[in-house]
Image 1 (cartoon, rainbow over the protein chains, first blue to last red):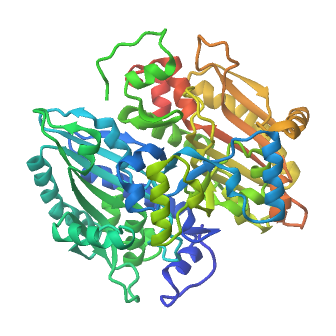
Image 2: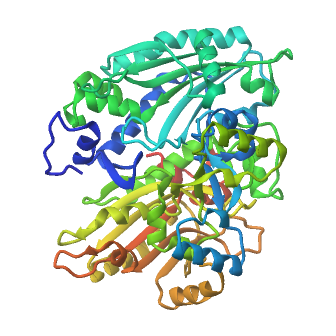
Image 3: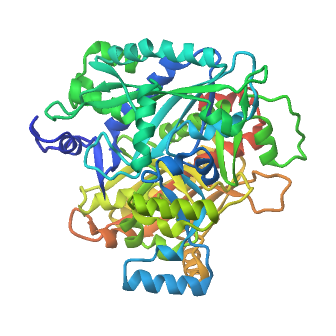
Length: 308
Length: 308
């Protein structure tokens, strides 16, 4: 829905997204509805990722936005990124407990202690739910899996490129170390091509994940030194002083997940994994910031890629 | 992904869905991944709902799977359905608090008190986030909104028709009472046609929502007596003794939401709302149970509706 409000380049990107009806306010920073045109663009980018990235032997697995709590305890997410995890709690009491809770709700603000931890958390990364399904011996050439879901990270922000709830679309390669490394190398070029096809200007940079606290500093440095993660960065807020926004990232996990879930090559060695993740909303924001707020006026060659 | 496991009609529907690779285990009852064929069917049903239900003046709003906590407190969901709500909590402490939490995590099971309530909850019904956006005066003939999202209800179950995390796709009519009532009446026939087009046998029945506790009994009875909710019910588990599963439901909210959010007709009267909600996975389960586990072998006329 277009509105009659006018905005200028001086307005923040978020204000322009609201004014054009692309994002809808919900009262919470980083949690937004999507208007009809925005939804169409998101779907188009999502489908383009599939067309561009799916190979002949790609297996598809899709997961809901929640996953097993036991998995994020086991895979290390809770200890490394406790500040980002969304933990799901629920009321499981009887009529009497309900009365006590409603009394607290109506008379004060703090009522979380009336709820219990459930067995689920919000999925922090689209590929996490696949690893527990891979336990055992892989086929000879490993597996290649496409997965996408809504992800959650608890970091309320007014930067539209840092939503709390957003879509991540990934391809994950699982197999012998040299197979996984070769696949990952191939994506350094391939991912740049993806963004260039969409008329986006980017640079590639080594990166690290936002590990928590004092101990996290060492983990960040190690990850960067070993070249385990690279990101494709696009300038989304041209007037900002920022370093740009990562719209695609590629992680080489080595045996981080395979050791925890006993995922083995066909000949019984510990397998490796690597994933390439596309931040769907971030790619859409880069398109809107680069080509303008009206997708009907984007360059023909970009529109042809997205709506073939 | 098809597996080589063989299953019989005597196996439970859930076992057959696992064996055919349609659903993937996650370790949590009611939270499942979807295999490639299942994902294709879900997308096809979702798109069919759009084609079937969208009228010329339908506005599209899409929301992520989380929404404002303040909204579910204000709209009455927390007090009416406290046993179903998923509340999102997060760690917001410093290095010292982190140490204390990790100690509890490693030595015992109860560590929820280290987390704080966030500003968000899991969306319980797809249409809930739209009402706060509608405050003010409507256009002369009201508005018609299409909305879809993953929804969450905390009811762990091994019945595949009662997932904790599932897709709901809705159309919502907002306007003068007589406009909303006429729209709702029209859907009684139209929703039956939708299911008949897919080769499904159904019946229509008055219904109520699962209000909590002693006070809830009265609300259930009132809702049913006033004919505010009807459901379209399909037999998904043919061998079960159950009453069938509601795959589409239509709620007439009267002024429940409009009074809370001051949503007015163009001439300043309190508006009414009604919604028709499609349970996407439930419709897919009905298709699989009725036409068989392989979508390639479904009746040609059903395939033509879904993949035109």
